[in-house]
Length: 269
Image (cartoon, rainbow, N blue to C red; front, side):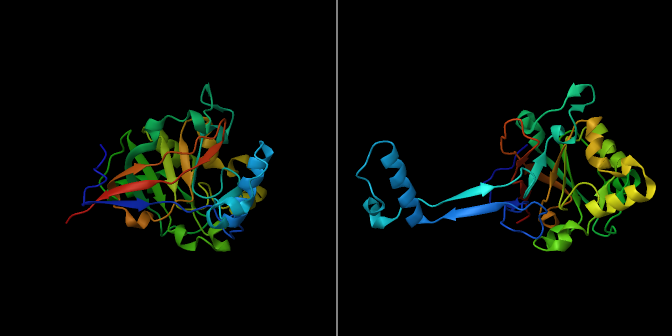
């Protein structure tokens, strides 16, 4: 199933955005404290003294420098990440929802099927008929090994406040449609899988209908699936044929895990 990584015809495409301090594209941005090499020498020497090696000082390291590192404070839904079924609710169907460390690794490898919704209006909802139209356009019938990617083009706005507001979202029916056809992982290059927060809030206040609140997410309470949010570079993929690997970080009992999806694209030479 996997193409040869070192084959000269295979290009690897990074489909992620990173964890960034104070990003205007994150409502809950990560905080990253950085320790340079000199500070690293001081802290490592301090640790050695704490465990009994009292004569060690920062100047004892080669050139007075040690190891650099970062201390990250972040929610598991910052940056590119995979939501586990537990994120949507305590149960999925008749079973207890899986946390991210329980997601089968087999779900995380498959063929990327890219559906183009770049012409959809911000705040609008992607329905079943539109999913079917896009699948017909690329002449594809869904298979269990498919990982469906919803391309909105919003990765172009990463780093701006508009990234949080200018995208379409999936409907509950369209989400269930994909999952009922064997799709276990669905991704999007938008901030969220549902419509923007403000659009959902407006629709709920106007209608009083609780189903206007996070409908695509809550579809996972009936049909088990994972979703990847804040992807990037979907325009660099063929609409079908690329192999995708997207293993989440193992967060014990986590509702999500950070992920760096990588596509293997075989090119003609």
